[in-house]
Image 1 (cartoon, rainbow, N blue to C red):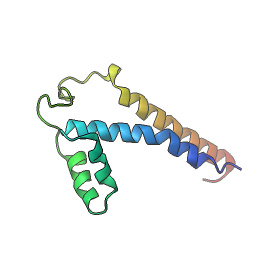
Image 2 (image 1 turned 90 degrees about the horizontal axis):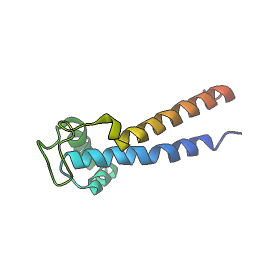
Image 3 (image 1 turned 45 degrees about the vertical axis):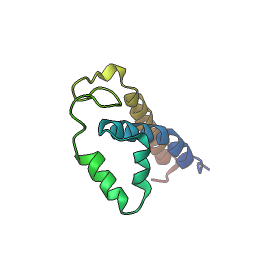
Length: 102
């Protein structure tokens, strides 16, 4: 009956996921295509360590100012994407509970 819900969830969360990852790549001084390294087996460990655990470049880089020094939460487009993804997750969980799948 609700077999389309996982597809809707994926469609609502793909953009925010890619946006946050590309933003973090830029924070590290890498291009957005570096995100594709997360899909390559064994190379994805390097990607996860670099993006997940290492600090961004100190000061300004070619992609803009250091977000740790100039962060303004009100003007962050990634926050909207995260909010949309969170709302999609909650909606999918509620729908699953109503249907009795979970």
